[in-house]
Length: 238
Image 1 (cartoon, rainbow, N blue to C red):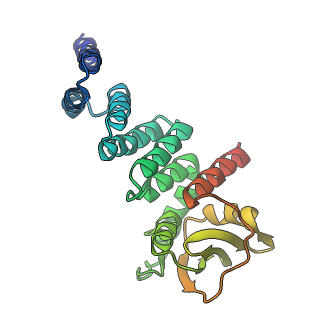
Image 2: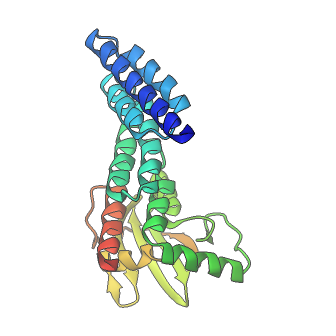
Image 3: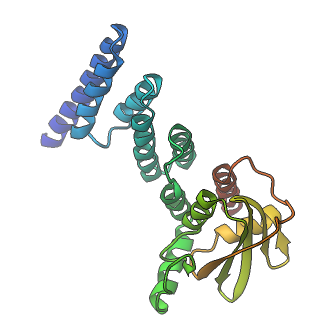
């Protein structure tokens, strides 16, 4: 009975906040709607409906930073629900709303949630060996590939990110911070990148290059490319 009463109160509070926000919008007061929803979210932080409403209203009102924050929070909630496609959409939207945001942690969370077998293997491998010192050459159990890509992109570096894992060496190639190629054994381009993103243990280092690499991977952005590759890996597993 107590749980039922709590659920009822929770539902009523969410509905009340959403109705109030709609009323504020009707009378051209989007900032009041944002304030009302923000207050409700502080009490109900796991409500997807409240956060989705605040995301939409904040974006419409030009409050891009607030909308981006809600996108990141929603991505985490969707990952918990195993709705990975929507989580990816919210991550991309957050990056669009505020280019300063790093979504590397979100990408890594999606990968680990989609591939728990890889996460377990990484944990076991990390426990079996001492960690490598982490600068820009690091340990994948500490710094994910996504974080490394983010650093390279932000610094607009040209060079090769080399990953040593399980006795094999693979590379991701960058021109001015953009992924343009990959090598993994006999595989190259997108097929090689899929193999690289499966790696969650081992070490990496980045070596700068003087000249650009030939372009074998075409992508509008590193983020879109990585998300598309994660989807392909998920389809391969299925």
